[in-house]
Length: 398
Image 1 (spheres, helix red, strand yellow):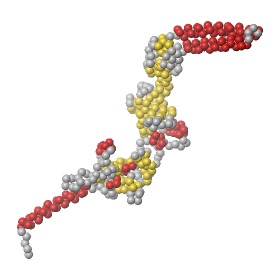
Image 2 (cartoon, helix red, strand yellow; image 1 turned 30 degrees about the horizontal axis):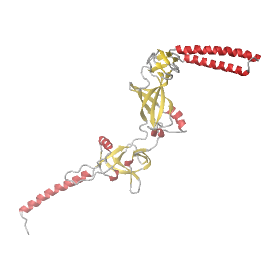
Image 3 (cartoon, rainbow, N blue to C red; image 1 turned 135 degrees about the vertical axis):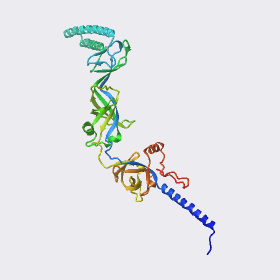
């Protein structure tokens, strides 16, 4: 039998000792590479989010911009911003001198025309003047009467009175200014009843149940069945119930939203004025269509070999993925309707699904990383960075 040299045995032993750790390291790298980093979302109940919050703005239920109907010089300005005025109170006065002179002049013309007209009545009966001359006298009388009434009315217009009780929200002029007819003088608000305006998006309007058409929805659904309250920053602990007033049926051209108006009585011991903002809380839980329809990003749905729509579910106990067949509906923007196959609370992979296979081990991308990924519009990295001793692998694209 041929014997081995002692140095040969030592060399073979060292080679085996070096080779075995290398194999273990290669297997370990391959094992790590099988765990994919995935981006996911949790399927939410369709009725979740029935409580919605919208930014609202406060306005007066009744408001008016008051102005004089005639031009002139402001003689008296009797109110300041913030003053309370009653219905019929005088707001401001113009210098009436020129208007009084006009009244006196028109009164003299009217008196003469009236005397001529009365004499003409007798003369036409006696045949001393023709019917044509009498008609001229009657026309002059009626014209002088109309001009006198106009002059008197313009004299009345030199006083500006409040058309309703309210608060002077803004004043635009000062005393002794020369103003023009229809120039804004003050803004008068009735703050006893306040309006709360906010905008509903188009997709939410479409989801509200419509039993008998749009008019029925306005008068019945919005008015009686949807609880709506206002929350103010100064009293965040209190909710103020609102009463439906009106809703536009044409979307705003720029925002594609529908304006909704509610009213509320002026609350006691809380300062709420037109122009302030509020948060409107709308409880749509009873009105949102109740079904098993979910919405997922389009990237979460793929087709299998049989062209069946499929999503990948993460088993959070084993951290493995498995395919689930679903029935899809219509697309809305970047979302797609899932009619069947999913349950609320399941975690669905939303990126990299073409690179998944059954029982693949995955790890979840952190929420912060997902947010940064969305901002950069870059596909998420689905595999861990290869180690120095492993071969490079191509990241999966979402």
